[in-house]
Image 1: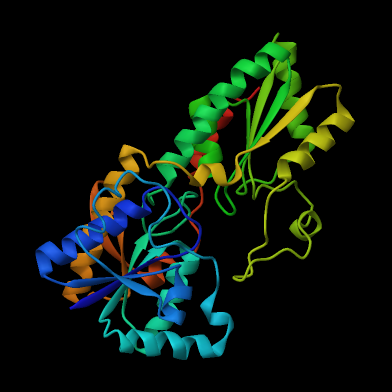
Image 2: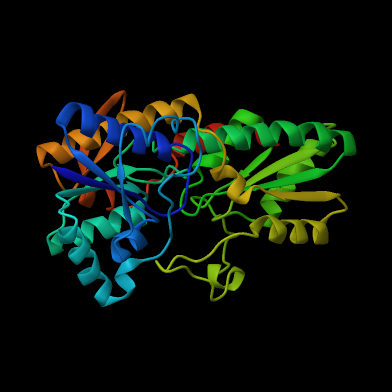
Length: 343
């Protein structure tokens, strides 16, 4: 059979490992042909594809980004795009497409399944907020980088007796902030799951000073919000093509409020796209490889409308409908663990 593969949404470490695994498994185990679809859904709309071979995926395992390119465009915003995608699907005689992405990419694949196209999914998300899988690849690399950043902030913040605010990614889930914050020894962690108050932050930092600590580190997920404040007031009229509010800047908002209420010297660091870049960790390489192999098998078996997922130590098949039902939140017990070390 002829199998297409595309990467959609934000890039993350491990995408190339997944592309490599899909290609090698499809060719060596099933004698399939593999077509790489360029730049996410844009490539399927434009018919921008290239054959993938064992040679073309050789050496890409440790590389960040994606050799196929990606985009955040929502192909369903224009009705004629569906006809174009279906036309190219048939033109290139594709029998299945393996879509590698998060909830937006897999959500599009789920909807396109009703139009005669067949899809298998691979979950990727540095936020680790996709339901149905214990972990998505990309998360381990991102959280490791955030932890290293906290380690670096410790030395400079302690030397200057400052408060440091580190803003990390996390629209719906504070997984990066919580995990990196615990591992890095942050003194206050703010996440979307629990709206915060500025007084609450000040109480935690004041407590540290009363105990002789002259510096503090606050880690905040970009989607965290103060109580009783509408998100639209913080990020007015900035949405992407999927209707998500464009985030970023909560660290500066917190800095301004804390400076009004204290005499602390405060610095803000926002990791932004740095969290997405670089070579994938061993954990992400292995997980992306396992997902890719299973996805190639699922396509050959005709198990469409499902994605590969991690449950415990096993790779399992989870339906798109189950995976997209809701966003996965941080385990409340992990948040309780973090609070043990506040103040």
